[in-house]
Amino acid sequence: EVQLLESGGGLVQPGGSLRLSCAASGFTFSSYAMSWVRQAPGKGLEWVSAISGSGGSTYYTDSVKGRFTISRDNSKNTLFLQMNSLRAEDTAVYYCAKSEGSTVTNGVFDYWGQGTLVTVSS
Amino acid sequence: SYVLTQPPSVSVAPGKTARITCGGNNIGNKIVHWYQQKPGQAPVLVIYYDSDRPSGIPERFSGSNSGNTATLTISRVEAGDEADYYCQVWDSSSDHYVFGTGTKVTVL
Image 1 (spheres, each protein chain N blue to C red):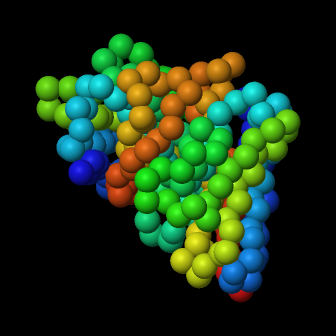
Image 2: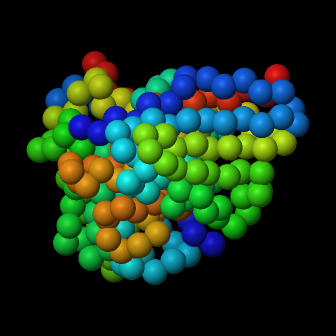
């Protein structure tokens, strides 16, 4: 059974940093691209970042480029999102999502974690 | 950037058919996926590659995509179908995933 368990969320001040983790199990982690998708309170889904199965290709939405870094440790079946220079508008539930293939392009998110809440506030 | 537009809400009586549209420029040339999200829960994939259903998704859910509109159709709507629904594509011109604005389906 595929399982994705996010952690690392919490309350942080504007300008601060957080590192989110997503522990994966039930599939060959290195064979699949992964993404982070966020949802601000009462709002819709917003894709944040994606990484290929090998980790060699990464993609970011424009609003986080230069502030967030996606990475993965295939030996530990874990996906990460390093978030720096956080802003109030980054407040959201952050979901990790598995793609059905190893490459990022044209993918579909076939499994999702339950999410971790990030609150940016003073 | 590529924009996907959905109606904010759709209301339907039990047993009837709900149609949720997802509008985008030449979306028929893209591959569309649909997700269902119930309150307090993570999204669930209900339609992928325009019209395929993942295992476990009822046959009542179907999808189509042509021209400037993709459509998710829910036949014989049940109370349990009440949720938010999102379309999603990959935009190759920007190398971004894009989600639609979301549609809240209310079962009357």
